[in-house]
Amino acid sequence: MRNDKPWVMVPQRGQQARVRQKEINRQQLLLRPVEVEKLVDLDHPVRAIWELVGGLNLEPFYVEIESVEGVAGRPVWDPRLLISLWIYAYKDGVSSAREIARLCEYHPAYQWLSGLEVVNYHTLADFRIRHKEVLDQLFTEVLGVLSHEGLITLQRVMHDGTKVKARASSKSFHRKVTLEDHLRLAREQVEQMGDPESEESSQRVAKARQRALRERRERLEEALKELEQIEASRSKASEKEKAWASSTDPEARIVLQANGAYGPAYNVQISTDAQSKIIVGVGVTQASADAAELEPAVDRVETNLGQRPQQVVVDGGFTNQATMEAMTEKQVDMIGSLPERSGVVLNRLEQRGVSLDFYP
Image (cartoon, rainbow, N blue to C red):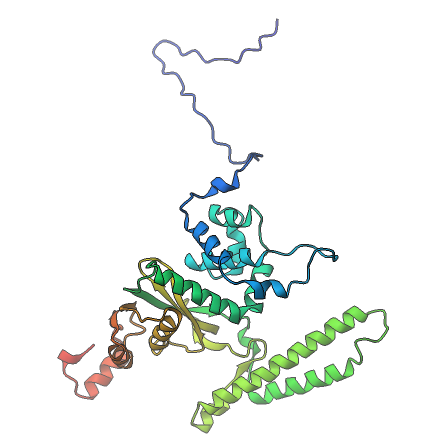
């Protein structure tokens, strides 16, 4: 006779019974209903941002949309959603389209905004680039509203710079003669491609190839312009001869990065309100150091919000005489660490006869 009852271990006298515990299975797949409205609380900031964006004049974003009723084509993402995603991401200090798309997969606030849909990062990036000037103005207006409502006080602003790697390799940097040779070859190749509208079997390939060559020629022309600016900023002829620029990312510069290595990058300056943790100013420069970047950062915050910070907190990279004098003139309290003493600096001070009492 079959016994369907599970086996039970009966402990012998003097033995302790084995504890029965619920196992955790993280390999399982679950299919369960989700009530999107309950993903976030009623007073969650993401709801306020959605309502705020909905009250703005977004007509310019809708006018250019070609996907309309009665015409073939698939629906597009609502500009109100894309703008809300970017603003909420900026609030959290996220400025990457890839990261926003990733957050849409699991973060409750982003899931609530998108209705559990995942917005492709290409869509987010293209929207941000295509409407850069309008969105910059829009984000500025939103910051102004938050400031007016007392959500941003600017009592203390934390500021720092970070190096962001450019879309270029060190091998793409060339001197003027080399760039001019590449530009000449690119022009010749474009001319030899012929008419892209000709009836040939590989018409699409020909168009793509010609577009790629044209874009390469344009990048080389931009690289030469950047090179001329670099040469103009250098006084000695020997320094001008050493000037070079990237053929793939002309505006990038070779700078010392966070990992201690030199490479093509940009210097991104970020200002954040200490109380609300909201980014109130962002700037991108070609400067290799942060020494002269605090004054422009304060000006950006004032442009965005109509007022200057009462205090700014920075690290030793910003602490120098010129910056301290500029902050004094702007009546902004500057809180920053002193730069570390180096052997070179100490030797120079000693050679000039500076007393130890006045060493940094």
